[in-house]
Amino acid sequence: MSTAYQGISWNKFKKKYDIILWIFIVTFLIVSILSNLTLFPKANVSTVIIRSFGLLSIVLIHIILSIGPLTIPVHIDPPIPEHTDPPIPAMLTHPFLEKRMTFRQY
Image (cartoon, rainbow, N blue to C red):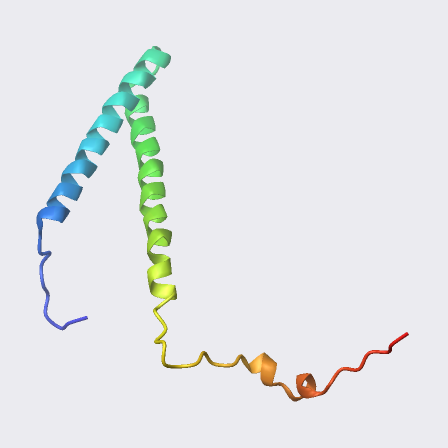
């Protein structure tokens, strides 16, 4: 983080992403409102709008939360340099495990 505030630097990808997102939101709301009005003709208009925005919020939060796990392997598994040996886990260096186990032969 820096001490100075820096505004969002918009690039072509971010603008395209926002346009696609707004098209999805508007299309989803139109389809949801029209389908609610056809399926429930006695429903109040405010009820239909509340249902549509509630369903939209659930869909958007699922989309947003599904983006996070898609980026986790990049951060968890950094490339290991080839010239170093991997560290030995502490469990394998325990003194109890260094003793030889003897088995009875029948």
